[in-house]
Image 1 (cartoon, rainbow, N blue to C red):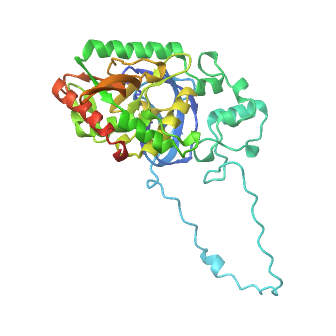
Image 2: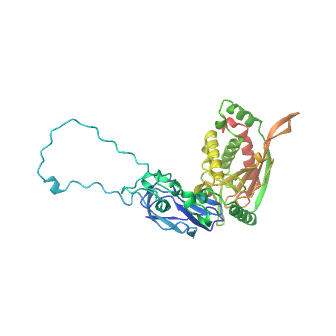
Length: 403
């Protein structure tokens, strides 16, 4: 049996408030399932579980605030307590006199069981979070008639009619708003604290480079010619893929500086800066970005953008990033100088792709170009390696068909 603890969702996080359990005691879980919603300065974060098991005791009450690392729940490994097999017939039963067999008659097909809209645990008990059970009691709602949207089909408070009005969350907000909303004021404080620490502690160096995008934009136009609007690729997907592949080549720019030493990452989990409506910025990780096809990367980017702007953030997306890419091109800005998010050691910034005059051999031509910048940590790399990274991104974008 192990303990599920309050995770650290950023270098600036000291504690978190449990908004809602999305599981019930005795519920089986698999890797990647959402176990709870925790409120931090960044907003309400969906917390994932990273090992298969069964939920034992829930050690925190909803609304409690505890420091990072505090136990939240007991997790029983699937192999720790095997389910007992059905008991064999007893000796007395086997020794009972034989009954006369009934005369066979027409065989009727067995009646099909009526499917239940909810999930049930091994004991037949409806799987529902504590908050959902409490709400159902308050609203006189029968759990048996509800369909669960939680892990494994468990019923959570959002599934109970009237939950948003009846279940107050932290700071007096309705539960539904607390789960899905982002407190922009608190997010701004968290961003400011992280950036102040970054500029105070990290010896930044900065580089800038201009990349010709004629090959990339021509390939993109051809690739999108026969696609439906919802399936079209954006230039951002090419920029992200080229950045991820370049970071793979230069591991001193892809990793974390922790406890006085640099630790290169084994994979490229690319943080992507996404602006939140109403203010604020969040950079969820796209895992193994260097291995994804352009279409898969584009789909991951769309999914992350939609969920971030709806306030649905997963814990792994905040903790897994090994480097970050940010762009203000869609805002019309031609260049940016980023601030590294600790404990990462690099941030790649792209501006707006614009048409500029360029000298090609002995003539001047209009060419689509983009400014790319690098903010990097001098404790992990130097300007020479940083320059090679930017040139690698440039080279990769000249052959977009190979990305």
